[in-house]
Image (cartoon, rainbow, N blue to C red; front, side, top):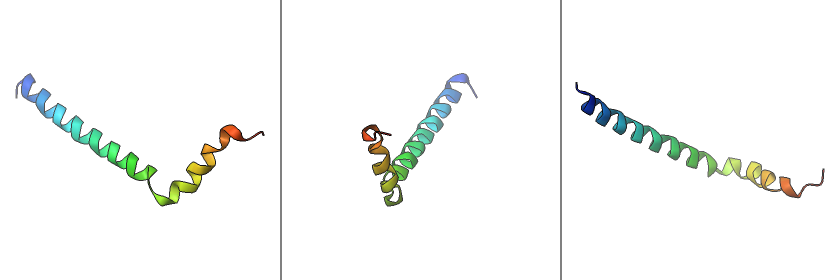
Length: 49
């Protein structure tokens, strides 16, 4: 295995991993169960306490 072929494999693995992480974060953020938490967090700057 040459360094060039290792680099190609590592790049492919990194790309797949990054897409999976991105998909996981987006799916977590769009879950209906998190809506209340995000709405509450969006009001933090307006709280006077």
